[in-house]
Image (cartoon, rainbow, N blue to C red; front, side):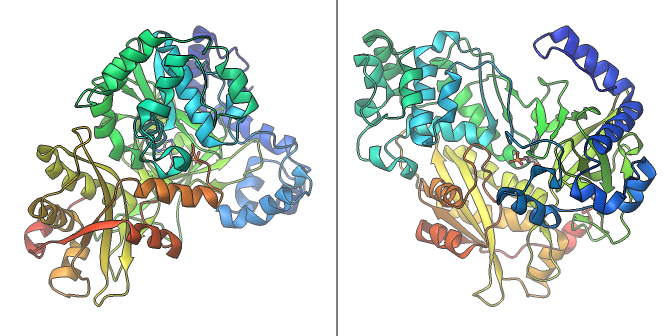
Length: 529
Ligand code: AMP
């Protein structure tokens, strides 16, 4: 039986958590049965199952698929064919959250991101005493909102306001005068903001101005929202890169990452949200979908994950502690044995449901020859190198990478956007420090890369290119203009799109390479993953 409960009743939620995780196998079997019987008449299932809806036929006849395999069905529905090609009911929303928020819900329907964010943040400032939690889907979207608040005049996303300063046209002048800026024209935003912007409030405007004009913005979130108890956003995986920035701006507020979710389906919850981000684990909720797991084998050359032809697929309750898997989901909304593309490591069990640590995307981001650098590896090496920036009051605000094939031998390129911890101070990285960063990155890459660099010489020296402030906003605007959603946008950790590369190249302000070649033999002794 699938659980029915009141999500606002905490006791009921905990009891569902206990029940579903204790009876994980039974719940999974009934979830699969329910999905197959609801959707039995869809073109997709009829094609593979011919009415045989038992678990064995499902496992035997339905292929494990990726987005590319489903694309034609999704495109057909998008082009007007019936939803029941894949699902028994129409698609109304992509992702919804049943949640208490400070700004009126109607504002979320405004299609103009600039107007919407401005008004939502304004609501947050006007009600600063009532804000108990600040959240965003991803750490990157949280920071985007925050930069929006502070760097209104710098962000290219906000073209129309870029040449005027935050104090004059920003939210504070609205608060001071009690009048919303003329460029806010969206009816839903205007109606929403009128509930809170009811008259001039020079006292609040003065207080905000005082906080924002301090030399450092360290801890500013806590000062602007004094009753906030935590920051909630996804901060694991590729989002871990933003933790130092969040810690800096949030001044000790706990960072909470309670969910492991995707557009495909909700997957797991972190039942120990106050633990340290590095040990976050997500317990899979067996009633969310039918979960299978593809074992991800690490190859023997320290190069990360490799899916072999004969991969093993196991059920939720059969995963082994310490092993890596890619989730394969069968959902109520039309995805059958669909590979999510993430790599998860089993850290234990909560009752009978496994707990996983998010490892990264199942994706090689950089490769020249025999070397394969996975997203997880790249995140680790960049995190290592950026430790060198800390004594210089610099932060890595975003990064990406690519292989430069125009040189011989080809080489890795990293694009870094840097920010200063001291407000309004120009970012001028010391070349010696940056060269050391290059060396640290190369030295931390795996032995295949280092061998290619040092012995075989088929990989050229890694280049670190610093881009001007705002370059990654431009990159986001570019991808958003091609259909990505702002709130779900995640900076790609490697770029191949030529136009995206042009945006980055046009923003390069300085370039560095290491003066030293990375070692190989020495590290080989320590390299066991
Ligand atoms: P989207 O499909 O845009 O909703 O993004 C879903 C993807 O975000 C997942 O497949 C993961 O790669 C990533 N993600 C979601 N939750 C987490 C989490 N708690 N930690 C790390 N990455 C996550």
